[in-house]
Amino acid sequence: MIYTEYGKTGKKVSAVGFGGMRFDLSKSDEENAEIVRYASSKGINYFDTAPGYCDDRSEKIFGIAFKDMPNDFYVSTKGMPIQYDTAQKAKDAVKRSIKRLGVDKINFYHVWCLRKMSNYELAMKPGGQYEGLLACKEEGLIDHIVFSSHQPGHEIKHILDEEKFEGVLLGVNILNFPYRWDGVLNAYEKGYGVVAMNPLGGGTIPQHEKELSFLSTDGETPTEAALRFNIASPQITVTLNGFTTKEQIDMACRIADEGNTFEPYDLEKIKSRLGRNMNTVCTGCGYCWDCPMEIPVPAYMQFYNEKQMFGKSEEELKKELKRVCEWGFLAVRKGSAKDCIECGKCEEACTQHLPIIDRLKEIAKWESCIED
Image (tube, rainbow, N blue to C red):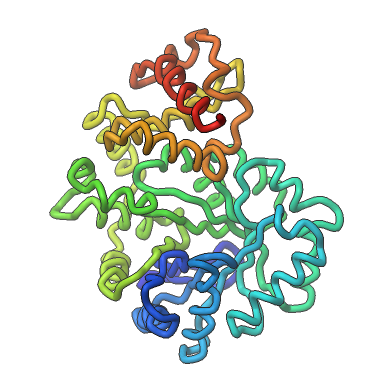
């Protein structure tokens, strides 16, 4: 197992982390706790959860597992600013998680699910969540205050520049890294801990291995390549995996042990493969950010990849669009697809020569359906 210092905290964490939102709920809490203990025996020492995960069973499952584990592990949990919007609510949430997890303190506590800057501003207001977390830190209930973001890289950079946190959790994988990598690099270069969630695109990559076979090299499956991309990256401190079986743990740990790092030229190679193998797919270069209507064109084009890459139906796309507009990378949008004035600046900048205007029109129709 690879162990790396989490930012400047002095804590050595495993490159593979256990993400606690995908437990098999058909099994008992004790059966799921056994998977956690197995991960610990394989060298995994970073365990991430949150209130509400797995029908609100996740923290309890970890608490059962921790009773019978060596004490050399780190636990991470979270709280949303919109839910804990006062210092007192934030402190109560921390104490509740500590009790459920059966630990003395939370090592890494996340200001959770920042989807737009207004979420961050809510957390940081006087008398708000961050103030409560600082009080918990002073009391020894939290070691490090960190944050979880679904924002584009430039907004993550803005938050990091204010130096209120010690690390960031964000969704990044082999398919979407062009959209998020500037945030990863900024955090890494400034000495923050970087934890990656959704390394397999929420299950998209294993479910579409045939379509993504071009990602594989040297006999790897696309799933293995995606895990290696995150786990072996020096810019990513911990890669969270939502384990449900011991076999999944074994695969992730094997990839960590092999430690075959993606170098900068590897990243460029992946970008070119995305373009060469799917020349109608947005590679997330970001050159089309400069929209006069403040439409997040790169984010919309990344979403449209769901149609181009996997042939999803219109109903599936509407459902996914609703999710990403409410909770995902499109939650930060100022302008919407319907606001396009067809000026053509995005298409002029597009390195893939994509019909962006036509795609925005199509997405605008889907958006009008989900808003009805």
